[in-house]
Amino acid sequence: MRTSQYLLSTLKETPADAEVKSHQLMMRAGMVRKIAAGLYTWLPTGLRTLRKVEAVVRDEMEKAGAIEVSMPVVQPAELWQESGRWEDYGPELCRIKDRGNREFVLGPTHEEVITALVRGEVSSYKQLPLNLFQIQTKFRDEVRPRFGVMRGREFLMKDAYSFHLDKASLEDTYQRMHRAYCNIFTRLGLDFRPVVADTGSIGGSASHEFQVLAESGEDVIAISNGSDFAANVEMAEALAPSTERAAPTGELAELDTPNAKTIDELVSQFGIAIEKTVKTLIVKGASEEAPLVALLVRGDHELNDIKAEKLPQVASPFAFADEADIRAAIGAGPGSLGPVGLKLPVIVDRSVAVMSDFAAGANVDGKHHTHINWDRDAQFTAVADIRNVVAGDPSPCGKGTIELKRGIEVGHIFQLGTKYSEAMKATVLSEQGKATVMEMGCYGIGVSRVVAAAIEQNHDDKGIIWPDAIAPFQVVIIPMNMHKSHRVQDAAERLYAELTGAGIEVLFDDRKERPGVMFADMELIGIPHSIIIGERGLDNDLVEYKNRRDGEKVELAISDVLATLK
Ligand code: ATP
Ligand code: MG
Ligand code: MG
Ligand code: MG
Image 1 (cartoon, rainbow, N blue to C red):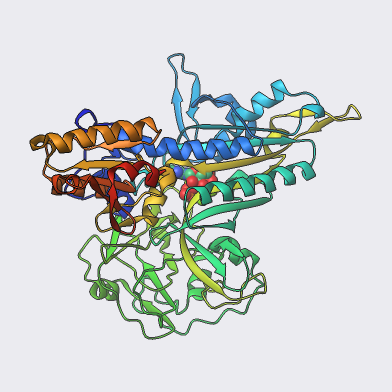
Image 2: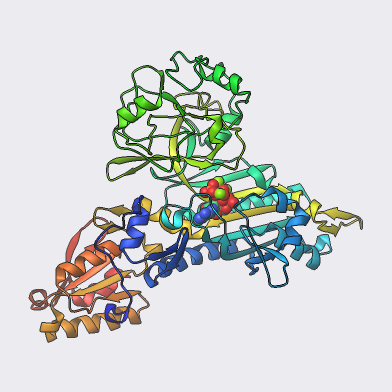
C-alpha cells in the first residue's frame, strides 16, 4: 500500500475526550473516529488490525471444532420474552419497533437466537455436541460508554454457543474452549490471566474471564502469588473463607448521617445488607500505608467524571473522610469530587439511588483519574466493601497470598447449563428415545476491545508498538527525499515490489513529506519494522533497518532485506 493512495489520517494533537492511552493512540494513529457516544467508524489502519484479531480468533475457533454462522443483529422480542430476558435484561437492551409496531431488540448477545436455531435444526443426540460461532456486531446501550472502542455501545464480538446431551460433554467443550482462548491471547501477544468469574445475569454454573493486565483496566482481579489461582474480586470474595472483619476504627466525620460512626452502623441504619458486591479502586501512586479509605459520597451532585489530581495522605489503616476533606485534599472544585485511596470502598448515600457499577484508576499522563458510574434507576443495594479480599489476605485457594491487579475483560466463557434450553424448550431425543433438554455453553471475545487492550500493553511515548501478529502492516518503507532522488525512488520501488511479491504487508511512504514527519507518523501507527532508504547508504547498496519495539537500527545490504524480514 502506498501512503499517497491511502487514508492515513494521523493526528498531531490528542483529542481532549480520550482518557486512556489506547483511545488516544487509536485516534491519533487514524484507526477510529467517533460518530456518537460509543459508536465508531473504523478507518483503514484500524480495520486492518481488527481483521487480524478476527482471523486469529476464527482460526483457533475452527481448530477447536467450532463452526461459523452469522445471525442477525435485529432480533424479535418474542425470543426474549420466551427466555425471560425481555423483562430481566435492563436498559442496556435497546428495543426498537418496526413500521408495523412489532417489537425487536438490537442484539447485545445471541443466546436466544442460537437456541431457537438449534432447537429447529437438531433433533437427535447423534447431532451433538455442536459448537457454533459468529464474529459479529453487538449493541449494548452502555450506561457509560468510554475509553473509545474499549467500552463501545456498538462493538465486535466473537460469540460461540455449544450444545450437549449431558454435562460431561459440556465440560469437555468448555475445557477445549478454555485452551483455545489461551492460544488466542498468546498468539495475540497479550499478557493475560484466565480468572474465575461470577456468572452474573446470564446464569449458569461455571465461568472464567480472560483478563488482560493493564493499569487502565476497569476490573480488579485477585491473583495468588503462590498458585495459579486468579479470580475477579467479586468472585474471590465469594470464595474466600469468611474471615473476621476488622471493625473500622475510624470516625465518620460530619456525614449526612451523624448517628452512624462505623460502616456497619451506617449500613444497618440504611437497612441494607452488605452483599458480596466488592468493588475496588486502586489508584496508582497512593500510599501503600493506606490500605483502606471509605467515603460517604453525598447524593446531591450530578457526579460524572471524577478526577483526582492529588493524593491525600491517609495515615490510619482505616480512615474516613468527608466531602469537604476530600475536596480540599484533591483540590476538586464544585461539581467534581474525587475519592482517592489505595483500595477504596465507596458507600453511596441513599438519595443517590445507586451506584450500580463503578470502576476507576486510570493513570493517565501521570494524573490520577477516577471514575464512578452512577445509575439513578437502579435500586440501592450495593455497598462496596473490600475488607475480605485485600492484598496480603490469604488466597482463597489456600496457597500464597493475594495480589490485586487491574484487568481488561477481553473474553468470558460460561457453562450455561439448561437456562435457555429449558425456557425455550430446546430438546433432543436421547439414545433411549427420550426428549432431553440440551446443556449449553457460551463463549465470548470482545474482538474490538482486544485491539484497544493490545495497545494498552504495547505503546511508548511515540505511539503504538504492534505485536507482529496484529500489526496493520508488517513493514514500512521510508525513502528519504525520494522526490529529489531517482536513485532512492528506484531502490524504494524495487524493494516495495520485492517484499510485496513475497507476501509481506508493506506500507510504502511515498508522500512528499520531510523524513521527520514520516518517522513520526510511522512510529505513531506502530509498524514493527522500518526500512529507511537514503542516498548515502545506496552508495554502498545499504539501507537502514529499524525495529519499532527496541529501537534497534542496523545497516543491511539491500539484497538481504527480504531474507531478514522473512
Ligand atoms: P463488561 O464487564 O466489560 O461490561 P461483560 O461482562 O458485560 O463486559 P460479556 O457479556 O461477558 O461482557 O461479553 C463478552 C465480551 O464482550 C466481554 O468479555 C468483552 O470483551 C466484550 N464486551 C462486552 N461489552 C463490551 C463493550 N461495551 N464494548 C466492547 N467490548 C465489550
Ligand atoms: Mg457489560
Ligand atoms: Mg464483565
Ligand atoms: Mg463478561
